[in-house]
Each structure stands twice: as C-alpha cells, then as structure tokens.
Image (cartoon, rainbow over all chains, first blue to last red):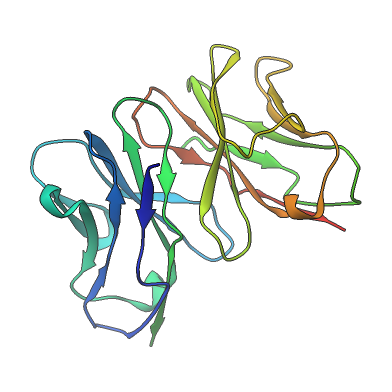
Length: 113
Length: 113
C-alpha cells in the first residue's frame, strides 16, 4: 500500500534558522507531490507542488522543495524561518494513475521569536 | 479567491446518532473529496466523488458512511450511526480536474460522546 512518511513530528526553531522537513513516499509509479500548510485554526493551504520538470520547485513564502526520485523523497526547505511560519506541514502524494491523495502524519513547526 | 466552505465548524453528537456534514465546493470544481484527521494522526482519505457518483473510497468508508450532492451545490457526508472512534476533524476538498491540487475547507470537528 502507498504510504507517506514524515519523520519529523515536531520541530522547534529560532527565527532566521534554516528549515528542512523530510518526506518520503512508497510508490513505484509516477506521482504528483505536494506540501500543504495548516496555520493554527485555518484550513490546509497549498504551499507548493511538483508535477514534472525541474525537481526543485519554489512555492509561496520562500519555501522550496526538491524531488529526488531515486530516494522517493520530497523534502521541504526554507533558508530563514519566521515566527509566522509556525504551523503544521503536510506532505501529500497523488499517484498519476488516480485521483486519490495520500498524506503524511504532518510535522508541527514552532518558530521562537 | 474562491473558497470551499464547510458547516458546521463543530458538531457534538451522542454515540449512535446520525450526523450530516456539509460542504459547498468551489463553483467550477468537478472532483470532491472527504478526508478526516483523528487528533494527532495523519490526514486519511475517505472518499472521492465525481459526476454524481463515488469514484474511490477507502476501507474507512464503510456502510455507515454515505455522500451525496442533494441539490447540485452542497456536497454532504452522512454518518448513520456514529461511534466514539468517528471523533475527528473532517475536511472537504475539491479540485477542478484530476491530479490538480486540492482546495480544502476549514473542516468540521466532530465529537462523539
């Protein structure tokens, strides 16, 4: 069965620190990859997506993610976090063969001012 | 920006009661989904709906669950006889076409007592 793993459950950083959140998936075929963010009390919002082409994708608010096919990974990065980045981050995988999306367990990021 | 809206935001019900969770999709979207998130766990797929019928459903989506578009605008999830373990955040998501990013509503927090 397809699965998505986010190994960091809770990350605490100081402002201006660099961020990298891991995401690995198990699916042998072609996939579309997403990172969603959920700010406190709000709905899930799309941060960035990868469908094809350049494996380094840039999203909103300075986030980027790199698709490494050989490692089945799609890690999220940001060079310098801000307090406003405090949120829950979810990686999601959508196999190209269907319309189902598989989510990871999420990573809670707390940024300390 | 158009939004997916969900009502109610919080529903408390007794075990064995029926609940109906409502979602108003973005108007031109064609694919509709229900996901749930039990506290502290990952976002789980329940069901996808297209062209007025279920296109995919998970093992979670048993006979106690049903979905419909009663009036062409609302997209509802009904749980016939709620169980304690149905307590979760239920998210509606919609998308214009398959493999496109999901747009999520704010969710309905269901508490079964």
